[in-house]
Length: 451
Image (spheres, rainbow, N blue to C red):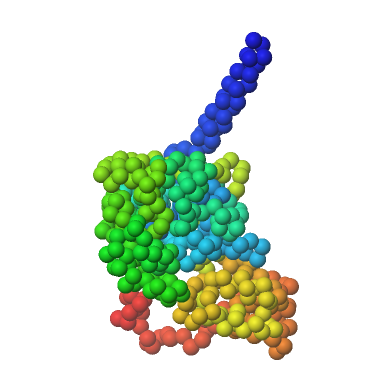
């Protein structure tokens, strides 16, 4: 009797401990977290998100996906926003994100606007969560209450992203396991997959499906999709097709109606209706949009609770990512990183090749920071990079190439005070180059056009 009682007490204690842990976690996050410290934060974020989607409707899908891909790696901690550094390969270049994850600049813009109101208060992780909710609502989808108070991760992991993010080729059992590992049910998974009622996918992600001639794809649908997606691998890989055939820019339930007609674009879409345990959920959502939207909002709320950082963990970033300042486009440094010359560090070249394909015309606009270490700060690391043969542009590294400027680069790499002083003097001198004054020129009413 005593032994049995002891067992019962232990089980009860464990259950109580788990309940207390859950309550503690919930208490750390609150919809009113910024009510006192930054009362206009949510309105400010909403304005930035609506403006971005008004300019490009597709951005709604991108922002929802960005939040999803953040939460699924190491929790909802904004790790997906961190750029690569010399000591860290971040998540942006993970297979599921490279060349397809979008919206970074929108989050940066929202963060910048909030920083002007409340410096160092609102986390990038919370901005991502709110952005997903506001994006959904703006295009006709559900809204939900976002719990706030997350902090930002100081690290990111490309390796973890490659292993944790669901693949467009995953089998149903694997998908269910992946979502289950994050505390999400099969129903949550199907509801969240309904986000594919928005957005587009690249040809390489659905090529195998539309050329498989399988019994799980509508023949006319496959024929239509082949027009923009050639069979040959490497040809038209980035060509886009809508995930929802009927209303790709509106949040509705046509995605599920498409699945019922065997018109799911990705294998991981159609697998939800393939004679398995999720068939009944797809069928239900295809008939009842109200249930789908309600379940989607609930699943997004649950997803936002995946391993957040709070309290003293993490940080509140001032800048969400090395994303808007001091970068160059791939086409400007392609020749340098593929030259294999003696004036470039081999590891540096390899790192830069990840976002800059060798083929001209492919990824020409992809960006890389001019300063590898601190691209958002004005310091002297640029010169230290040159000393290590890590100048991004040829016109950078040429300053340290056995010529008359070598000694100056060396001096600045050791003495930031001298560099900053000389920079100020040089800017002052440059400002004196052939100005117009007196009766010359005009005072423009609009800076981008002559009067």
